Length: 414
Image 1 (cartoon, rainbow, N blue to C red):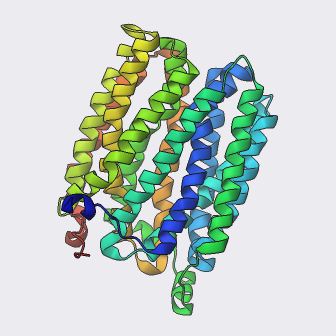
Image 2 (cartoon, rainbow, N blue to C red; image 1 turned 120 degrees about the horizontal axis):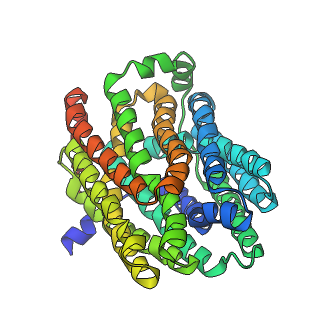
Image 3 (tube, one colour; image 1 turned 90 degrees about the vertical axis):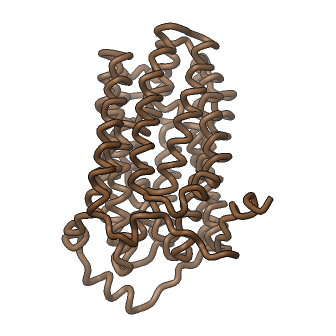
């Protein structure tokens, strides 16, 4: 019981409310996330390669918007930038309802890309500055819990609602997602207020990305995370269409597969984060790479050896193990960036950190869509090799990390 009580992240009220809004937002994302490629390809008749490029456009536009968002966060504050991001995202996802050709898909993906580019540096900055340093890893772990809980529940609901035989069901999914961004916006404006001082704003105005990019340790972490996202998490956008077209898995079962992944993260994230306290961060990331490589090697079992319900069970087990890896990632990546960041330029640091996600998710479907069409089995084996390379790179990078940031801190007793 004492250990269970120790899992309480003990977060400030505003951080809790911020993450409550994030829960609603994540539910909406979960409703559409597993079915984006299916919607564009199977429902709207857009070729698989072009559909992958549409999804990649979101990330590519985010790459341009993110650094701008970092400067804006440092100058006008995370709350205002996050509010603007939520407006872009609500409009963009609602616009998917109107997509009936490739150019419209690229247009709405560009709008959501602007929103995503602004979203992550703003939200990460708010969580960092509103949380005590020794609770940041718990704050980001809790963020991972609520976001995955929302995505999992959303994927489950989306799988029950969506069917390619009734295209209007996908319109409902996008409408629900757009509404959740509005809910998050209401919570943000009503309850979350960002601490700021004139001194910090003045220092931020005099900063620049050139200073941030000279931080060797931080840039190494950015590059490493790009590889992890490209080889690891970007596979989430490829797995549903692989499961449906190669393994005969239905939309409902795809939703259940994502839900299993989410349940594992929701149950394991806080315990894994607690266990990571006092342990070296880069070794944790090395373990992550090995685990994800093992997961991707096993994916071709579904489709090559088994199909239908049996394939869904295999993929669910793989995604459960993958979720443990996500917990390892969640206990290290964001709090490490927060510890490396210069306080007066935290928006810029968070923007470049978010850029690593955006580049990974841009390259993942852009390359993966064509690779999946060319070799449905080979794409997963290639991803496994890259995960192992990321694992080795993690160990090599550790010597560049400042000593104070090499381990997850152990919080003071409550």
